[in-house]
Amino acid sequence: MLKKIFDVSFVLFVLPIWLPLIILIIALSLIFNGKPIFFIQSRGGYKNKKIDLIKFRTFDSQKKINAYSNILRYFKLDELPQFINVLKGDISLVGPRPLHYEYKKFYKKKHLKRFQVMPGITGWSQIKSDNDTSWLKKFDLDLWYVSNQSFYLDLKIILLTIKKILLSIFKKNKKSSPIKKFNGSN
Image (tube, rainbow, N blue to C red; front, side, top):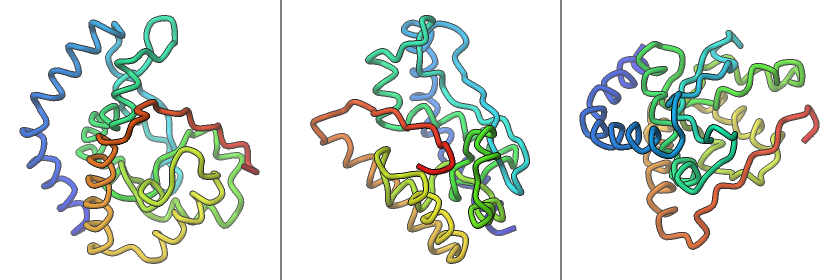
């Protein structure tokens, strides 16, 4: 319950701060990517219940990722609409990332443990891995989080996420590499 109160309070506190950026992203998305602005995708939520995750759409009408969309992805700005998912109670700020619902058929029995906690916008796996890390390693990091979760760890993950995003500003290569689809063995 404390986690839910913290999540909602945090979102309500930061939303007015982020609102000008969100409005700018909406305007630029209309210019560079057109309608619809949002991308809704079915993901596996708490207890593997299907949820609809909301993101800014990061491909244009030809299904291509342009330079603008690449910036949104690189700085994780496409994730901002997930604050709505937090307010709805679909996800938390911190937890294992909700993955494509179609991956459900590939999980090994031990991986199902990741559904014992609310999924999150960010998580232990997100700060300890990158797009080149194998899915199985990411799942191991998720399982470590499930076994060690605490309010303190969640605060640490939020701070490390902010640090990781800020440090990414100074990286030379600002191109977002695509994540390979999970196939059950990668």
